[in-house]
Image 1 (cartoon, rainbow, N blue to C red):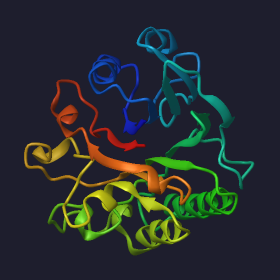
Image 2 (image 1 turned 120 degrees about the vertical axis):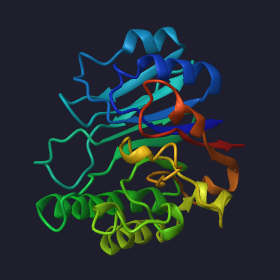
Image 3 (image 1 turned 180 degrees about the horizontal axis):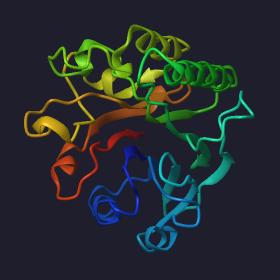
Image 4 (image 1 turned 60 degrees about the vertical axis):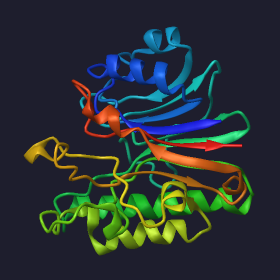
Length: 256
C-alpha cells in the first residue's frame, strides 16, 4: 500500500501535473494540501476519471485539503481539527481507507513571527498533539500525513542562514514537532534516511530548485500500530522540476 502527501499549491492550476503523477506513481492513497479551491471548484470529475475517489474540504483563495484513494472511496471521518470551534480555516481532513486512518493536514505557516500567526501555528500544533494522542491510546493504525510547515532539524534544510527568522525553523516550531513525534510516532522519511538530507519543498525564488536549496516540510508520521509495516519511503523530487510544478514534491511510504 503506497500512501503519499503532496502540497499541490492550487489543485486546478496544477491539475495536469497531478494527473500525470497519479498515472505514473500510482499511489493508493494521497493527502493533498493547499487546494486553493472552493468545495464546488474541486476537480472531482477529473480525479474520478483518473480512478480515484476523494473527500475534500475547500476554501476560497487559500488552504484546502483532500484525501484521494485509488479505486476506492475514502470514508470521511472528520473535516476539522478538534479543539477550537471558531477555527474556520480548511486545514485538516481525516478519512478511513483500507483499514487505516489517513489525515491530510496543512499546518499554519506562522509568519511573521513573533505575532498572532505564529501563536496560531503553535496552538494548532497543541490541538493536533491532543487529537493524535487518541490514535496512540486506542492503537489505531494511522498516518498523519501533510505539510507541517516545519523543517524539524538542521538536516531538513540546506546550509543557509537566510531562513533564520522564519517560522519554519524556529526552536518553538521544532520543539512542537518533536513533542508530537515523542508520543510514539515514526517519522517515516527520517526513519528511512537517518543521516541524509531529504527535501520536499523548494521555493520558487532565488533559483532554489536549480541549486537544490530545499527544506523537508512534508511528513508522514506512522502510529506504533502501523510503523512495523513500513517497507520504504521516499520523495518524487523530479515532479518539482516539471513545467508548471508546485513548489513541493510528493513524499510517500510503502506499507506491507
